[in-house]
Amino acid sequence: MRITRLPGFTILTVFALILTGVTAVNIFTIQPIILPLFIVLSIFVLVAMIQVYFRDVHRQTKTSIALSVWRTDGIAVIFGAVITYALHGHTVFDVVLATGLVGIGAALIMRRVQVPIYCGAFVGMSSPMLLGWGPFLLASLLASILFVIAKDLYNGYGGKLGTIAFAGAFIAGFIYRSPFLEGGRFSVRESVWILVISVVAAVLTYVMSIRLRQGPVLGSAFMGFYLGAVLMFFPAVPAVLPVVAIGATFVGMSNMARLPHEGYVALGGVLFALLFIFSAPYFNGAGGKLGTIAFISSLSIAACHTTINHFMNAPKKHA
Image 1 (spheres, helix red, strand yellow):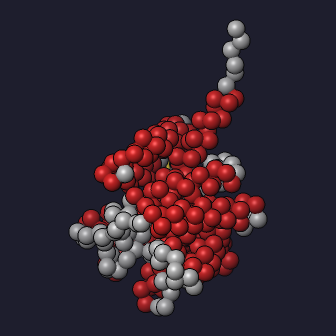
Image 2 (cartoon, helix red, strand yellow):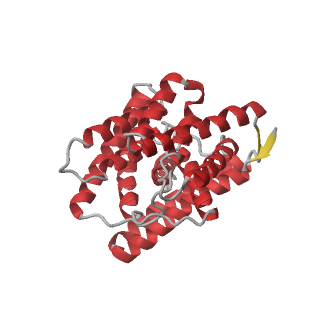
Image 3 (tube, rainbow, N blue to C red):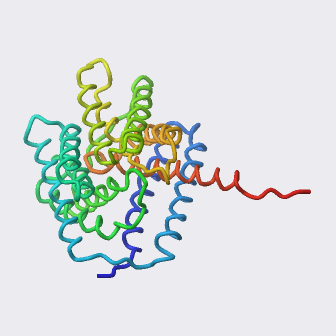
C-alpha cells in the first residue's frame, strides 16, 4: 500500500510549531531578555524542518507500507497506551514509573514492536482529568494511525514518538472539548534543578543507547524509571523533577546522525529545560507534551550541528 508522506510530515511539523510558538509568547511576556536567543533556536528548528522536507518528502513523495504494519504497529501503539494509562490511573505507579516500566518491558520482551509500544506509552501519560477513557481511546487510535503514516519521517530525532502522541491527545481533547490542565511558574531554584536534571538525563540516556548499545527505547525507559524512582526519595528537591527526568531522556533517544556526541545532547538538554520551564502554562495533561519539547530541542540542536559543519567544511576562497 502506497501513501503520501505529506500528511504525516505536516502534522508533526504543525504540532511542534504550535508548542514553539506558545513558548515564545510566554517568554516575551515574562522574560523578554532571552527572547532573541529563543528566536535563534527557533530558526534552527525551521531549518531542520526544511531539511527534512526536502530529504524525506520532496524527493520521495510516497512510501510503501504493508498492511501487516498497519496491524502490528497500530495495535502495538494502542496496547502501549492502554497499559500505561491503566497503570498510572489504577495502580500505585505514577505516570513516570508507569511509562518507564512499559518501555522497559517492551524493550526486553517485545523487541520487534518496542518502538510503537513506547510511542503508545506517551499517549498513556495523558491525565484522566483531561482525557477520560473515551477521549483517551480516540487519542490512542489517532496516534496509532499517525505513527504508521509518519514511519519514514523525522527518523533519528529524539521526541518524534512523543510528538505523535501529543498530536493524538491534542486532537482528541479538542474534539471532546476537554480543557487542558493549569500550569504554573517555576522559581529560580526550581529552574536550576530542572536544568541540571535535564542535562544529566539526556546525556545518560544517549550513553546507554549509543555507547552501551542498548537502544533508544531501553535507554530512555530505564533512565526515566531509575531517575524518577531515585528522585522520589529526596523530598527536598522539586516534585516536578521525575517528570523532567523522563522528558529529557527523549532528547537522548536521538541517533548519532542527528546529535553526533554527548556535547550536542547536553545542549539539547539545556534547550529542553528552557522549553519545559516556559511552556509550563500550556497543554498540561496531554500525553506527548514532554516528547514534543524534546523533539523541538533535538531539531534545533541537530540543525545547529549541520549548520556548523556546513560552514566549517565549505571550500575556502583564496585571494
